[in-house]
Length: 430
Image (cartoon, rainbow, N blue to C red; front, side, top):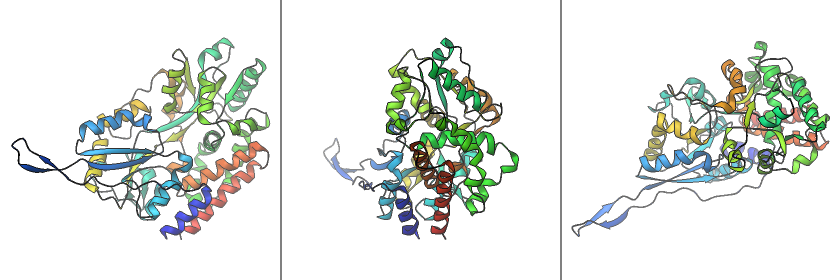
């Protein structure tokens, strides 16, 4: 069963698998005591963490682990999200893999295949709020504990908006109009690193959050979707077609398909574009490039006026490889992570809220325009919060949206592709 669904996932991603070395403990060494007698000393145990968020977003946290746990040597391995599942799956199929795995929407798939350790009864697990544990639970068992929350909205250049008399949009029509106003002034309204499938996927789901998930009548949609009883091509179509006006209006253009995340970030940070859809992890780089940048973020607006929605929720989490040879040390790391000090260390390099009970975070002035959305709880990403086959589905959907921008597919076809992947994954798990 393990090989069946993992092979399916590899086919769906269509990226050549890269196999990295497996983690291993450092053997005991010999050293001499001060009195000349030989004394056996344990070398630090090497624990490998594989993550798809860059090491810079974990720097303060990793430094804290080194200081607090001298018996452990952390080896952090970054693998970009576009290739993460391929690398991880190849290693797991070989009975190897990292000791600690950063997981998101693939958690339930990995747990169902037996690759993750059950953390339900560990003492640190109960320190987290249920909302943070829910995306990483299956059949009443917890398989990962949450790191800080994540969210994405529309970063904007406050100075540029003020100079041209532009206000933060309250509706999606206003959002489109802003793009036209800026373009008429010779300013690139929005940049997007559409070389990756993620930005369009997330931005379109931002409008789905506003126009679909905000309706109480649709609260059970994700459960039906998991069971194959509901389809995106039916339920999401009006909202995604509304969002696709950005494509038909020539705002999101085919040439953006050649633009990387870093190139888009640079365009925005250096004032070559007025808006860019991303999240708090980019703030440090923006301010390094332009220390005087007046940065703000607003939520993705809906068809009707309201507080808007951000794409996000419980972010990634740490799961434990069921085959780790260093269970004791790995659990020490997760136990330390479930402390206010560790949570604040995580948030320092990648702003977000914490799911550890009792920890409060001040996100600052940059996110003032998002305050009402946060207060309303308007932060959601269905593929991490609810879907059994989250990552494969949104990856397929995002890649199909790239084809929509290229002019070779329709929005309905892109949603249909996602439905087909969901059905394929469901069948592979039977």
